Amino acid sequence: MTRTTPLVAQYGTTPLAYSVERRPRTTLSIEVKADGSVLAVAPLDAPDGEIRRRVEKRGAWILRQQRELAVLPPPLPARRYVSGESWRYLGRQHRLRVVIGEVEGVRVTRGELLVTVRKQERTEAVVTRWFRERAQAILTERMQVCLERVAPFGIQHDGTFQLRRMTTRWGSCTRNGQIVFNPILIQAPTECIDYAIVHELCHIKEFNHSQKYYLFLKTVEPCWKKLRRKLNYSVELVDNST
Image (cartoon, rainbow, N blue to C red; front, side):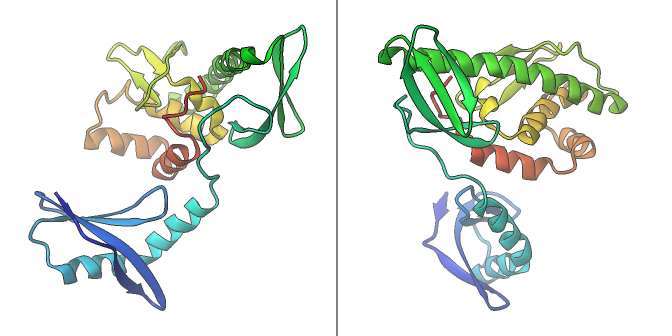
């Protein structure tokens, strides 16, 4: 697998910077990464000119993807659990404000997550517990909405699920319909939470990630690619908040 230094194609009057990654494959694909960069994944023997022409042909699509990514919030730094830190909750950024008090808990108020702790070193535990409780409540609520949405497509489920911190997945579904969700989904916009739920529910009809599965997912959620990209960029799986 080899990757070139950045190249430039032209779409009308707009330059399109891109790089090429060559692999032992037969097809050529264009990807727009979360940071807006463009990657052409090409066969080992694909002519440079053909790759450039393909990038130019997809110019309108590339610019549209980059515009959508540009309005998403930037990645957040590592957590320190101190006042002034920015946290995402249901897709919006909130400032953490830590105060000392007897009754521990978290309140959402005027763009803040107001955290009351008996002592400063309790902040991480209190915030982690609150996010997990909110994940349980909101995912339960959204699961019912999504079950109504997928019912016309022949999907039935009792709505139960478990929460488990995962470093590479938003959720999972076994062959017998046992569903697990990553609790950090609570940081994502509601539409992205719904996408993650629908994604797992679709596995009840099509268990693996085959072409047939993605065709079915597109039938249920036509905008699934856009929502997946928004989810992957707006919330980092490596986040250690829950």
